[in-house]
Image (cartoon, rainbow, N blue to C red):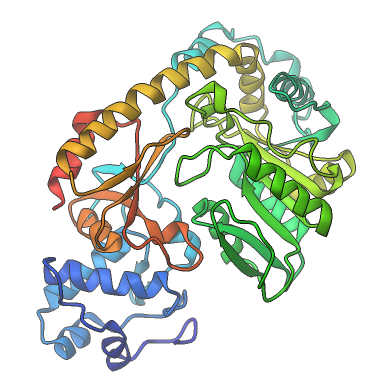
Amino acid sequence: MPEPNASLAVRDLVSMLGAWRSGEATLGIGLASAIAHLVEAEKLADGVRLPAQRALAAELGISRGTVTTAYEILAGGGYVTAEVGRGSTVSPPNRHRLRLPGSAAPGVRPIAVDLSTQSLPAGDAFAAVLSRVGPTALRPYLQTDGHHALGLPALRAALARHLTRAGIPTAPEQILVTAGAQQALWLAVHALTERGDTVLVEDPTYRGVLAVLAGMELRVEARPADDYTLAELRRPPAVAYLQSSVHSPTGQVRSGELLRALAATVNRTGLLMIEDRSAAELVHDAELQNTGLAGQVAPERLVTIGTLSKLFWGGLRVGWIRSEPSLVARIADLKQTIDITTSVVDQFLAAEALLDADSAIAERRLLLLEHTAATLRTVTELRPEWRPLPPEGGSGLWVDTGADAIAYAMAAQSHGIRIAAGPAFSVRHGFGTHIRLPIWHPPGELANALAWVR
C-alpha cells in the first residue's frame, strides 16, 4: 500500500484498479467507483496523492475529461480532497465516512439532495419551546462567566430526571453535558483506551464511531451485529462499543436476550463498555423499548452516551455522558482540553425542552411511523428488486440493493445526490450491496432522487 503523503505512480494505480470498466456505468462513474473501493478497503492510505489527470487518462486510454469527472465525483463524496497546486489526495476516513460541509469545494458539483443523513428537522414540540422562552429568560446566566465544566446544573438535573423516568435511575452527578453525541463518543473512547488497545465493535455499526477510531492508534475488532462473543479474537478487547437501543444503520431494536448475554460477558471479563443510546427516544413501538445495560453490569464498567439532537432537532448540539461520578469528572477534565464549555444557550433550551419530553417523543414516533411507511412504499414501487429491512426504530432505512453500493453512490453523486453506501458502516469493507436511506424526506423528493439514478 502506498505510504501516506506519497505520490501514487500512475501505473501502480492502474494495476490496482482491476476491471473498472465493467458494468453499465459511464467511464467517469466506473473509474470513481473503483478508486472509492480502494479507499474504503484501505488500499489507499489517507494523504496519498493520486496521479495527475492527464497522465492517468493517457495510461488508461481515455479522455482527460473522463478522469476529471471521476476526480470531481470522488471529491464530492469526500473520498479525495482537491487542492490547487497539490492535485487530489485521499481524504482521512472521518472525511468520507461522515458528511462533508454544506458548501461544495471548487469544481465539485454542489449537493442538490442529501440522502446521507438521518438528522431530523425540528418538530412542533421544540418550536413551542422557542415560542415560550422570553427574551429575559437567560438573564440570570448573563451574570456568570458562562463556564460550567460538567454542564449547566439545571440541564444535568433535567437529564437525570428524564433518564430516571425512562427506567434508568440517575443522579445529576452522574451526568456530563457534551456538544452532541459525537463529542461524547470521542471523549469516551479517548478516556477509556490507551495506544495499542483493542476495541470491539459490531459490523455494521454507526459510522461515527469508525471515524473516531480511525484517528487513533487502536486495534479494531469487529463482530456481526448481535454477536459479542470474545472467542478467536487476536487480542482481548479493552473496550467494546454497542448501540443498546436502536442500532444504526439497521434500525433494529436490541433484544433483552442480547443485552443480558452481553452483560454477562462484561461482568465475567471486566470489559469496559461504551453504550450508545443516542436513538433511544426514536423506538417506533414503545413495547420494544429497553433500558440498556444500566443495572446489569458493574457501574464502573459502563459509560453511556446519548443526545437530545435526535429527539428535538439536529441543530441542537447537546449530548451527554452517564457514568460513575469519578469517571465523569475524569472525562470532564479531558473535555476541557478541546472544549472549555458547552454552549449555555443550547443547554438552556435543552433543559426547557425536556420539561415536555413526552410530547416530543410522541410527536417523533408519529412522524417516524408515517414516514417509514411512505418510504417503504416509495422504495418498493421504484426499486422492486431492492430488499429494505423494515426498521423498528430510528430515522434510517437499511436497504440491500443486490448490486455494487459504492458504484450506486458514485452515480448518485454525479447527479448531485449524496447517499451513504454500506461499506461506510463496516470495519471490514463489508455490506457492499447495502445503502442507508433517510425516512424523513418527503416521498416525492425521495422518489425524484431515486428516479435520477438507475
